[in-house]
Image (tube, rainbow, N blue to C red; front, side):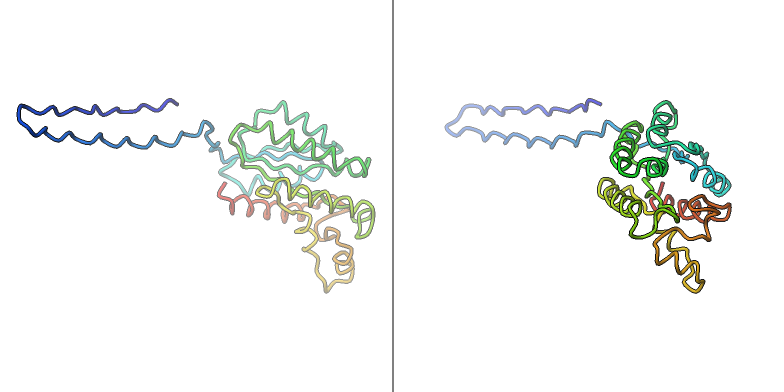
Length: 233
């Protein structure tokens, strides 16, 4: 938008005859130029798009009824890697929605060593495809498998380092859902106490080594809802 400026004309006060010239008025001080308006208007839709793998659909099913004044889009497909999810998102029309990215678990499962760089690359591409000015997105931490990803394992160390890197890359948009899921364990229950020691998501939330039960998805969805509300989105 081109700002228009009002230019004040400065009149010269010429004096009549006489030995003393009439004083001239000092030029009016120029008004400061207004700050340029932002070319990017932040999106205002309250709707939420979820992008991910098999962890996403149950969270969608739990979040949608918790959000009666929002549309919620389920972009979760079981078995997909970050590359496949990012490719789908590139063709999707929900780029101006509040967006949640929770993917990379299948990359870790297929090739743990190569996974971190690919996940970071695909996340960067997904975020770049959001509508310009849409900073309302969350990057959720990758979750470790309770069987193969216990504390001290290669998978565990890879995921912890990856999540630390994601937190540094997106400091205002990262949320550690993995740590939240671990913290749901009850230290008074022997199995859950062992899970806390192993730093794996609590079995209270899952039906196998990683996938969420309906009740577990509800716990995750409510925490996600709280995080979105706390940010005023």
